[in-house]
Length: 97
Image (tube, rainbow, N blue to C red; front, side, top):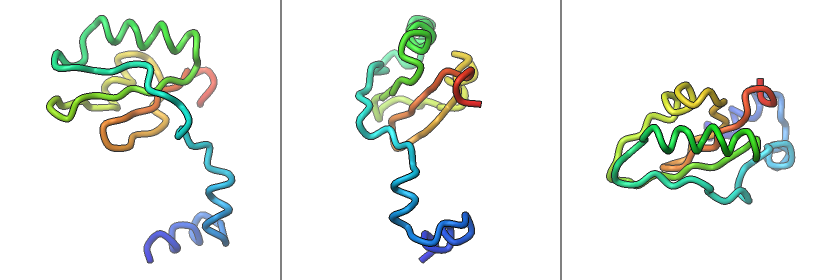
């Protein structure tokens, strides 16, 4: 029941109301996949390039490697919008402050 308490503390009376206002990134397809070599300079450069064009991107990585999403966001100078499992969503810091 902790989930209901979170909604009440946030001022949302109906849990379905949160779904309506949650921006969600479910429909966004991953545009960058991080493989065995991990987070390389090439991938960071690609993140920067795609953020300039798309403004929001989704990045997935293999379960066999360790990725710190906060570190990736700092290194690529982007805003970390969401992390779920081995997937993160990054956005242009000018749009998401």
